Amino acid sequence: MRGDLVSLDAKIAGVAIVAIPVLISFVLVGDEAVSPSDTPNQITAVKADPKPIKRRPDAPGGMEIPFQDFEIWSILEAGR
Image 1 (cartoon, rainbow, N blue to C red):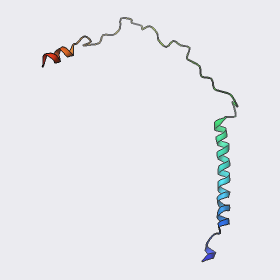
Image 2 (cartoon, rainbow, N blue to C red; image 1 turned 90 degrees about the horizontal axis):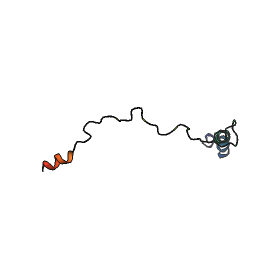
Image 3 (cartoon, helix red, strand yellow; image 1 turned 90 degrees about the vertical axis):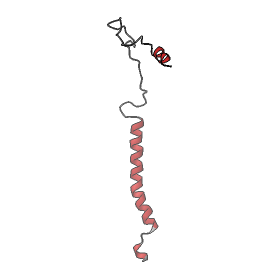
Image 4 (cartoon, helix red, strand yellow; image 1 turned 180 degrees about the horizontal axis):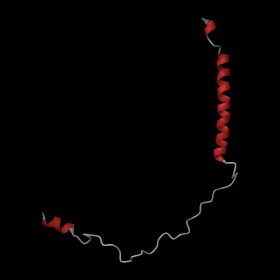
């Protein structure tokens, strides 16, 4: 029955054979994600949009909103 069991040293060696390349690939991919090779050690500058935020409307009269001056409270008060 002892012949069927794999020794602890063989298990550790098998895990090391798989784990070491995986760890190396994580380090290489992580390094590339942090500092891409095309722009090393450069900070990305964020600039404001030069266009104005507000502008005058094409039709300065505004739009018609139905029931804008409707007084709902006077109707509710009359119902009491």
